Image (cartoon, rainbow, N blue to C red; front, side):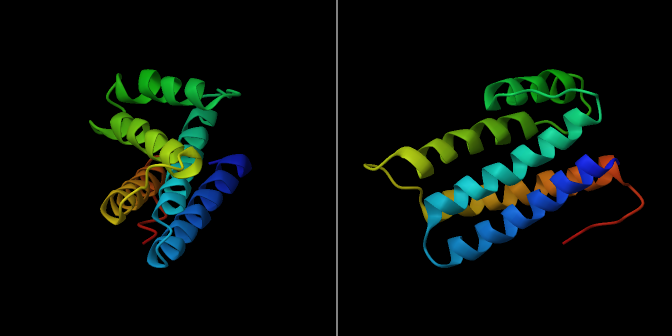
Length: 131
């Protein structure tokens, strides 16, 4: 794992910690958004390991699907989790007439932890679980 990947993994962990903190205080939309960013940073780190960098969220999400999900390098469902999290982020950050429920935010937080666990095993399998 290179230094940029380490920094992204640390940023993902911090984003997940913030998601948990603000979710516990009732800000479910913002919590879902931070959970998405935790996943997003992980995907960026994985793509960096392939020598790939992109400038848009949609390109990063698509590349993750192509490079990791379709090839079976990550378990089934991870690309769908990322797509769903991106939708929740949009809802949590930009919608004023809809809210993200506590249950939906909680699911995004759980999924973000799955991404962090996955990245840890893929990028540094000797480090063990980080929970």
